[in-house]
Length: 169
Image (cartoon, rainbow, N blue to C red; front, side):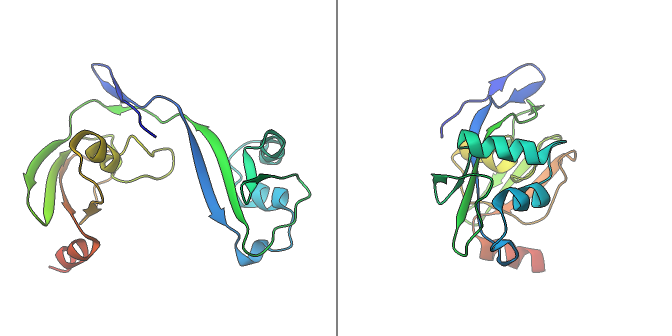
């Protein structure tokens, strides 16, 4: 799970990598074909049905860590994993600067183009991942939000309780 960023004069690039999405079966999926469920619930491709059928054949879409096929009916307690090759968009190469660090909080200068937390197309090119990778700061909790394209000071608490307490001030 280790990686290194590649830097250009303008961008921080995360090399492509394999990623595993995981999901427990939802009640509304029980007794439905997995292929129908994924095609309906995760229609990210022009031909989602064809994509998921191929993923099942290749073993990239699995049930309880076992290969499956298009006819599989979802059961209560199943765990579905989907293995994908991720290509994250680059973000600006401006370093994340720590403005202040205390026992309870970390304040950083967040450059624009970097999302704060994982989601959508971003997992490793996020502020939280960069702080963990480059500053050994783990399990931080944003006190407020700054959108991906917004730069500025961001307060992060070292605990979820601390973040909630600060939000209420």
